[in-house]
Length: 209
Image (cartoon, rainbow, N blue to C red):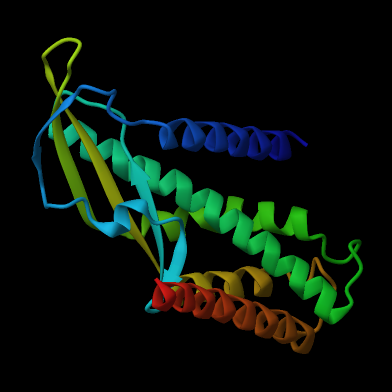
């Protein structure tokens, strides 16, 4: 129960933190002094999506007086958003698995299984992911006259790593779920189909833009 409370509290803090970060914009009147590229790249506006065999999550920093702190904060934000993205995706996957295989919630509860997966695997998956790109802006505050930086970080979650981590997780849970190896393989097959559908959906949206 204590572990569940910690996970729920962490998820709530993560959602609040990410929601707050989404509202960060330079106040009207601030002057743009410099950008790492021009114009602001389209990927800075991306919501989490799958494309090219990878899953992309973008983080945004708060305002900082120095560029390094700004970039570090954008990277932290991208990893927090990635945790929330994975938890939602895995819960959806487990819901599909239980529906397609006709599993009772007493055997495999999607909410419980997704939280358990995130607790056991998300740290390794996200820590091993890499920020592929940074975008940085330098502004001058209209209120104080002091310069500040804003940054965006484009985090890549490799597709193969996510697939492998899910299979490893279900194999470890085989005895607890009282499933045969054949049943676990069916669970993994449904997940692989779901994960592929997310990638296909993301690539279709990208092609339509």
